[in-house]
Image 1: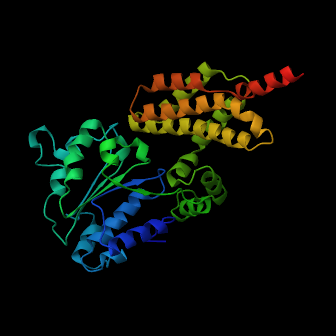
Image 2: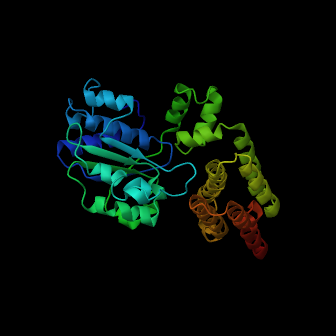
Image 3: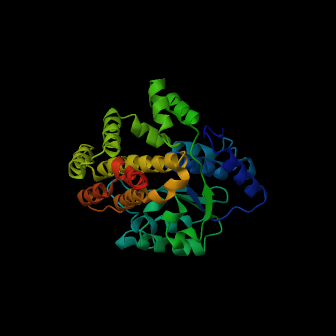
Length: 348
């Protein structure tokens, strides 16, 4: 465990080797599931690199120098952290090059180009890199192509596929793996996020290695709705119109802020993604797997539609339309099994 961060010791060693060889890149793209510690890792990496007393390759800040004290106080002049505002669907241009009245005189790119106040580095962390728009990504292009000699830029996203080509091609990708179930459970307990161990274990088992997702699953209302959704997908007759109304009402209950409703809808759709992926795994590994491959098409279509719905949510599309189109594309259990029954009837 490095600085209290669980599950990413291999990434720590990767950076130590890179620093020992003097090959630290100017831009890194951290990718992996949400809620596995990517942002915290980036912050601790910055703390270690900005320390003026300890060797960089050790990645162990002294905690005593002026740089470390300022970092702990949260006002280090050589660290810049920006991310997506709760009411925004994309990272705005102003974050990078300033507003209309201060173009190229403010913003992350301007600050990153300044001479370091301490030591030899300026570090910028961009959270929510999945939400670059084309204009904001273009604002960053010059910094990526011609980085200041003292600059280190860390972008945090979920997948290389979700990054614009201009970002992806100019970044060194660092992959973060999902956490082990026991690790997620222990984090939930140690941080007091879930008090009951049985509940923490249940949430961890369904979290896909993400603490963030496990916390969401601890919400009793969300858990209850998940059971209703899975029951509908397991049923022999999926009433899509009724389900769409139910999903819309549940999403609206998240609150008035668009970000809260967007997060809830993303979580609900993710439940369906997990369901269809599980069906594909279970059926492809079953006793009739060889004959079932050709009958997987309905599940694959529903899975693709669910993944597409997640993308539309992230792009801030009209939620009512997303819900309606998504529910129309869902496949009930009876449709999955229909080809099998038809084949049996032909055989008879």
